[in-house]
Length: 253
Image (cartoon, rainbow, N blue to C red; front, side):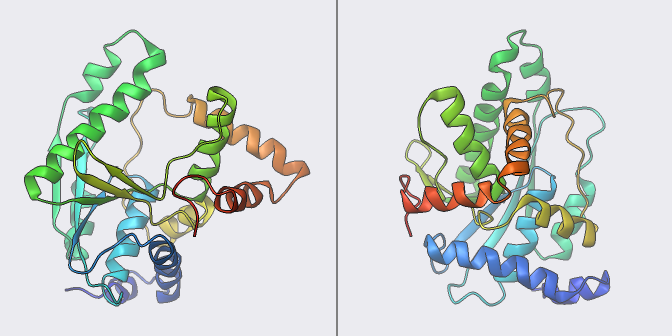
């Protein structure tokens, strides 16, 4: 097993930056009892900065967490032309993490559908279904996703604005139909910290080829929060703490 600090040293990355990221992930994992002794945890790798940072954090945490666990990285290739996950595969090899990539034509299927309002939800369902199929084939029951602090706050705001309810995804979610548990170990990490880590580590980020990238409802929530932060600099921290204090279902610690 390759020690991540050795990997960091070879790339000239301060070990402390990786340890800090893994520390935040460990606190979240322990607060919400996300990992059990001896299990294999899949890591959903989209190729973005968040999921690649999650991979690095779990690879580091695997070395010393009191509950021993294994990790296995999974990618659903959407079929967009020119998207190459070879550098991601090399990173997994460097970290001694098994990697499975499933090629699909989901991009062509989804964006051949003229109903733009449903494209995001269709995409999410198809990717989730493919991941669940892969998990079933590998006999893995748990998957870690790269949702972070900002994702949680934005999702809360989107639910309030567009659904008229107080809601957010949960840190730990059991999907009974697939018999799969989803965990989100990066909920204590802010997006700018992940961006800084990904840049420092020169992670092989795969550009997002989605035609709707930057034009979603989530981008509207990001812009609204930035506007609110001009008057209320700590608004995201307050929203996040309120979610835990309320608490929303699954958020109490």
